[in-house]
Amino acid sequence: MKRTSRHVWWLIPLALLTAIFLLVPLVALAGHVSWRAFGQAWVNGGAAALRTSLVSSVVALVVILVFGTPLGWLLARRDSAFWRVVEYLMLIPLLMPPLVIGLLLVFFYGPYGAIGAVLTKFGWTATNSLLAVVLAEIYEAMPYYLFSAQAAFSQVDTGLERASLALGASPAETMRRITLPLALPGLSVGFAMAFARAIGAFGAVIVMAYYPNTLPVRVWIALQEQGLPAALPLAVFLLLAALPLPLVAVLWRRGRHAARLL
Figure 1 (cartoon, rainbow, N blue to C red):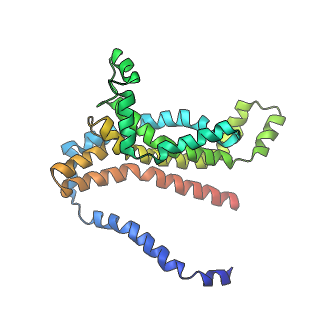
Figure 2: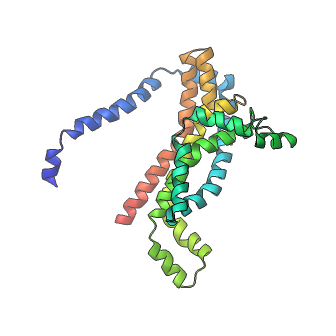
Figure 3: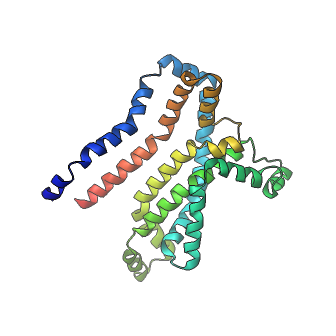
């Protein structure tokens, strides 16, 4: 082990340079924003935009959790050609540029699309509305949770599930008492990452719903109309809203893994 470490010492400077390269912009951001700018940004649309982003992201994450968890489980446990094709197809929204996602959503859910025409009859609209924001965030964030859920369920020991069933537990009880608790660390990280992706969604959101302004859209408007000094405080608000949950989820997962090794 020590010999191997000596042979790869040159990787350490490269790794440190990479980490510094990624973190330096955050240090620059902290040094260029004043407390007064925070107050002005909060009053001038920042608070409303943050509220819209939080509400829409929570709604989107509920939908993602309810529908993405079963699909993630099936992708992990079904080995047929059909489910492999489904898995490959799910890569498309993950790899698709967000602006393209927005254009497709407008085409499908907009007032001239099939679903949009039905929504209009009920007095709803999937453009420039909170519903439009939620739809865009679901499409941008769902793949992040879906593939995390697939990985989490793949790591669960199926032998424990078979033992539970052999002892008389129902499939639903086995899922609740064995599968979900064991997959929870991976599911929590996927959920947190999907939340960060949803609250930071911009490309699809701005195509679907310029109004109501989400925080990322508000950052872009401030940058266009007032310049960088007005956009930076809003960017800090976005970071403070998006980062804590993923960071806590990763730390919790590592702590739980370390505790299991003791």
